[in-house]
Length: 503
Image 1 (cartoon, one colour):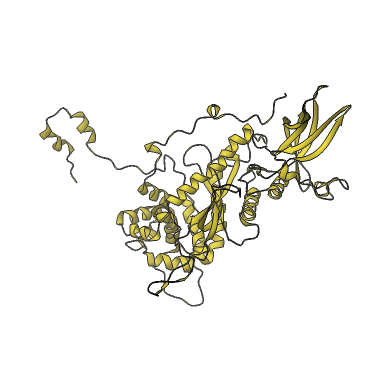
Image 2 (cartoon, rainbow, N blue to C red; image 1 turned 180 degrees about the horizontal axis):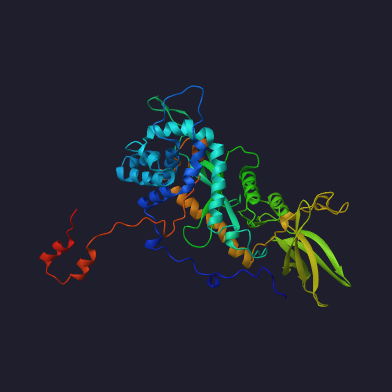
């Protein structure tokens, strides 16, 4: 049997070991993260679109400039809620940390004009309603541009580099998935009646929350369970190692959106592919089907996901080379040959792929598998199109996939499932769950901390700085600590003298 380009899946004991465990030097404390945000230049660039436009009438000047609320928006992801964030900004030490970053990026005069303490929760709620939500679309566009620029600075999605379409690297792909953020309240009706006392109770209801199915895309999977919350689609990319992930884009998925999660994810993926020339493809789960693969494959990129379990084998064609006849079928996302056994039954045998070809034309791309067909009379080569379902006009009359009734993009994947390449790459899609878990833990009580889709959209985006060695805040020195170790042989009454310091 010829060797397959994508290889056979490896057993668990032959796979690479997991990444090294985090060390104390890899962790970032709350104070260090606050310092990172205060020194991060992109936060101030994001806040530049919040500058107030002068109106016909001069009103009362705001208590805080707009960029303070951009910092507040970013710091809220550390504290878990606006109340705790506002309380921490009343601490002079924390507020001076922000003033140091403002001094670095905006100048000392701007830092001196600030009040003695940070904004309160009342200031934040007013700014969120009057300043941030009206500019939500502009914030999203600026966030996506800054996030992509940060990814390029970190060496992610590089354009001038070597590409292997049959085995791309993890940092050359984007990974996306949908997540459901739990509703801030469990109430689904604004009023309820107490059956015992007859009291009418009023409840606050989140208008953006609905019952969402979470845990998989297979309707027959028993692990699926309903969650009351808001669904978001998030795309990210990362390299191996810590502090290498960058969230590129996100969108809220309304419960009655046409096409659901897949339609929103496809729009986001296409927008990133158009902006990032170095992106080779998309990692996603089974929510994307053949119609979505066709769109991305026509753009000349890869869509790597698992084949849907409900897909049945389909007859493709019969090829003839001399006196040889070989029936080709699609199964498990790749081309198989139907082989007849001695007992009169038949089985499907996967054909090895020798090469993955990518051909481009004026307006579209085509993908092909160069197959090796084993035969007692010698090996045969056959080229079969994958990933794209042709329509009338793209092939001869009566020979397009639409006319023959064969949904090629649904049945034949660019990188087949159950292969070594797919096994090594698809873990990047599963790795997005770690980011969602971190997002859930950052919320107070692991529930969404805002009501409404617009306010909740301000909670999801994260623009974290990548901490470097020269960016890390130096830890406070502990004077004379070395003297204690050197003088540990001294009597007990002499040790306090060695540890005392003058202030």
